[in-house]
Image 1 (cartoon, rainbow, N blue to C red):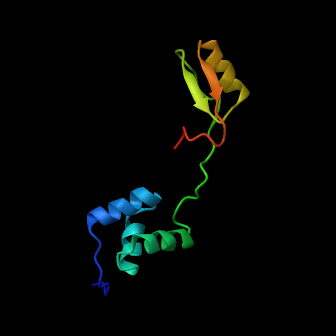
Image 2: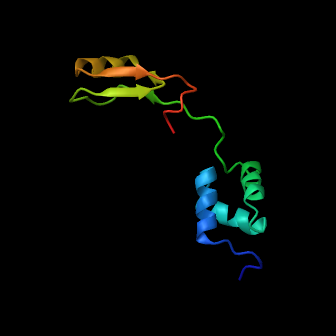
Length: 104
């Protein structure tokens, strides 16, 4: 049996998970260890490297497979083949800026 005095509610765990994108059990443990202090739990998760950095990962579309219909694809980068295949199907490849908040 655990000797942890504080037991976070499922709603608290969910709120921390949504705020940090960390794993459910990591969020639960962080809340237990900080006595339910949400900000301290966020800091603890960051210190442990369990929270993705604030920078968004870039998305690159590769040209593997086939495109069977016209699509407009928004991404940070496209391989040459991907752009060719999209254009051949009547679609388009639209590059978005790295700082654009469109991808989450």
